[in-house]
Amino acid sequence: MERLDKILSATGRWSRREARELVRQGRVSVDGHLAVTAEEKIDSAACILVDGEMLAHEKYIYVMLHKPAGVLSATEDSRQPTVLDLLPPDWRRRGIAPVGRLDKDTEGLLLLTDDGALSHRLTSPRYHVDKVYYARVSGTLTMADAEAFAAGMILTDGLKCLPAELKILSPGECLVTLQEGKFHQVKRMLAHRGKPVTYLKRLSMGDLRLDETLAPGAYRLLTPEELTLISHSTPSKL
Ligand code: URA
Image 1 (cartoon, rainbow, N blue to C red):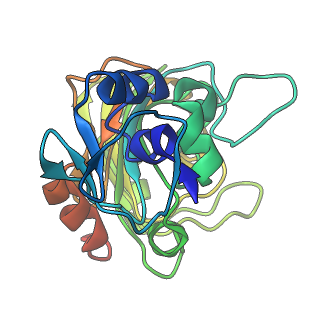
Image 2 (cartoon, rainbow, N blue to C red):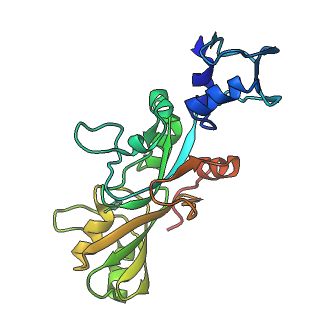
Image 3 (tube, helix red, strand yellow):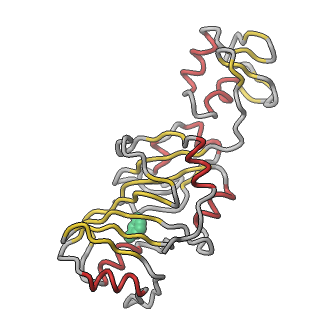
């Protein structure tokens, strides 16, 4: 048994306040009866209609966040804001978590879900899902840098990197495609080439691209098409 406003807001389509408003406006029915109060506890298998349309009890939610700089890709932290602080509290209660991590100062595409199986598949080193980053660096990028990325480099601390793609956009800007996601990997690879990163943003993960209409800090649910794209993301094309 679950409160009606909680069930409605867990879909990600309405906040708790909006859910209560829907009920107040007489737009929600439960098992054929008009819902009178949003506090009502109802069976999670009940048939809920909103404006006559049946509510799909989604098993999982999938959220695209344009991660801003300054927040941690973690579910909680005692001192610093996390990406979950940007989302409705109901989603946190569902157990939503980021799929992989971006550094605190990195911006861009972050997928969050409570679907542990998909999250595991997308982050598992075995699957090698391509991640594309836009980076600005100090110094001048050269073809030798691109060749070193393509060959797969070994960093001074011994970290072995799989072959990656570096596409030079301008002397100080590039696109980096990685098939793995080791700690600070883009920054470490570019630093190894003597080109420290000054700005980093993730543009895509598998076939899922950041919706550029989302401002940093904004989020939305994945569309069914995007969910299909990310669920069927194939191993690296590198
Ligand atoms: N590589 C990095 O160095 N930082 C990120 O946040 C992601 C990839």
